[in-house]
Amino acid sequence: MPKISKILLLAASVVLVLTVFLGVNSSGVSAASEPQDGAYRQINVYSEVLRHIQTDYVEEPNIPAVTNGALRGLLESLDADSSYLTPEDYKAFKADKGGKAQVGLNVSKRYGYATVVSVVPGSPADKANLNDGDIIEAISGRDTRDISLAMIRMMLEGAPGSELTISVVRPRKAAPDKITMTRAVMSLPPVSETMYENSSILYLKPVVLDHDHVQQVESKLKAMQKSGNRKILLDLRDVAAGDIPEAMRLANFLLKSGTIATLEGQKVAKQTFTADPSKAINTTSPVVVLVNRGTAGPGEIVAAALLDNKRADLVGEKTFGEGSQQKTFELPDGAALILSVAKYESPSGKKLEDEGVTPGVLVASNIDDGGPGGDGNEDSIPATESQPAAKKPGVSIDEQLNKALDLLKSKAA
Image 1 (cartoon, rainbow, N blue to C red):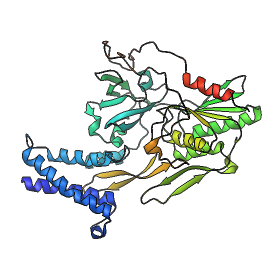
Image 2: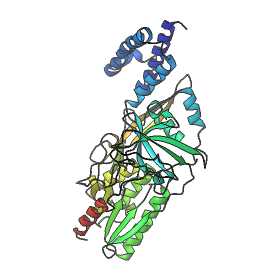
Image 3: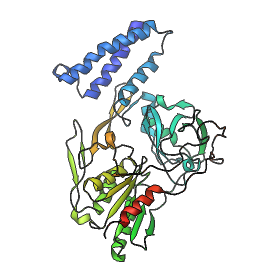
């Protein structure tokens, strides 16, 4: 294909993506608003860049790869959950039915790479000593910078017993660690319950906010009412998975009234989710919520609702920052866009995706996230599920939990 034809094809591809992205069609381009006009003016700049790439780059570039990279970057510059899927990727995405074996990682994208948001307790990833904030540089040898988030999540799944190899960059460690895990069909642990201070404090720890686990929390809160326990400690650290409606239901258990969250987008009418008094269980007992950098999505909905309604104190670290609604747009060539079309906001109006939730009482995690090698000066054996990476002896005291308990002790029942 002549060079000029290649350039025109690539420019046409970008125009097509922008057309879908900006929500206009060929009959409406002339009526585009000023911001849209500005976006279309960038096509001239983009075409000029392409011309230099095509004519002046050190070697003839791979035009399809350049196109895919440009379109992927366009979407990921918006937020981590927006993705461009090539025709091949989208075909695999549509064929995926879920329900496969996993390794227990909740991931998103940060700094262009796949990032561990949280790790499921007892999972292969947990046994391999993976932690919140670890950067997954590669999956099965493929650089995660070049893979959309939707495809990354698919690649982490597989047949039970199959192996998954990832390269992980850890804090204070120069070289990536290669970790091999065996995928497994996992059953999530139930909500854990502990009594503190002569059974005056009920500690609840769900690992996910799905229907079953929220139902368990509901049962335990109702039982607490009968037993006379007066204070609640809700541990949402590393709670990143689940369903937003279930998260709102959990927040409603502790709220008699007020806004739980709102959802709004450029073309999504604002929705306000408010507490239903008939669904409240305990609206008077003192509450403290534990959060950390692994608290995301559903966990952030609950934390923000209780904080902004002055129903609970938050202790721990700033949360991850995730909370948007996606829509898939199919393109004529078989590719697709997964685009965030609305974002959840806290009752005070903060977008969870952009700002996360900051606790009023900040306490850093004492987890040793240096990983194998710690400061990067020692040699280490690559971690596998059967041979976990060695960690330096660390302090086992849970400072965040202790601070939350102290805070509750000081509150009148």
